[in-house]
Length: 244
Ligand SMILES: Nc1ncnc2c1ncn2[C@@H]1O[C@H](COP(=O)(O)OP(=O)(O)O)[C@@H](O)[C@H]1O
Ligand SMILES: [Mg+2]
Image (cartoon, rainbow, N blue to C red):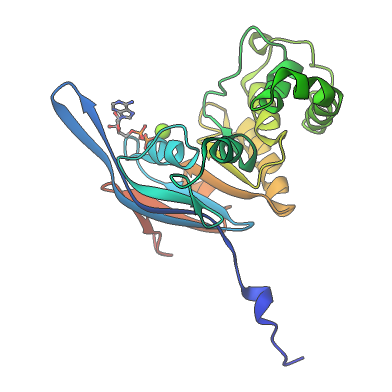
C-alpha cells in the first residue's frame, strides 16, 4: 500500500494562457483590460474566475474561446498555440474542443429549441457532409435536451421559454459536440438563486463525468463549488487565497 503511482497525481494542462494583453480603444481613450494574464486549466478541473464587474472576466473568457484575439500573448490547447494552428485546426478548437455558455444565453430567436442545439453541430461542416450526419446530430441534441428536462419543448422558440429553460438549451448547445472544456460566463447571472442552482447542478454533474470548466462569476457561493478559484485584479489573474 506504500507504493505510489505518480501518474495518478500527474495532471494534464488542457488550456494555457500566457501573457495575455487586451486593450480596448474607444476613440482616443485606451482601456487596458488584460495586462498579462497567465492561466492554466487542468484536465477535469472546475476553475472559477472571480472578479468585480468590469474587471475583465468576460474579455478573458472570450480570448480563451477564440471569440476575440489578444493584442499580445497566446493561448495553447493541449500544447498547441492558437497562433500556430492552421485555420481548420483553430475552427475545430473553437467548435469542438470547447463549448461556450453565455450569461444571456444567445439563442437564435427564429430557430426552435432543437434547431438551436443542432446548429452547433452544423458549424464547420459543408452541407454535403452535414447531410449524412444530420440524424446522428439530431439524436444527440434530443438526448441532451431530454436529460435537461426539455423533452417536451423541441418545437418551442426561445421566447416561449423561461430563463432557466433557455439556459438549459444553451448548455445543450455547448455540449452537443462533446467538448473537453466548457467556458461559462456568469451562466446563472440572469437567473434567480433556485433556478441558477439547478443550472449549476447540471454543469456539476458533467464535471463529475470529466468535463473541465472555466466559470466566470462574481458570486463567491458559486466559486465555493469549484475545485480552484482565481481572481481578476488590475488586469491580471491571481490565485485566490483561502482567507478571502
Ligand atoms: N468591446 C469593447 N469595447 C470597449 N470596451 C470594452 C469592450 N468590452 C469590454 N470593454 C470594457 O472592458 C472592461 C472589462 O469588461 P468585461 O471583460 O466585460 O468585464 P467583466 O466581465 O469582468 O464585467 C470594462 O471596462 C468594459 O467597459
Ligand atoms: Mg462579464
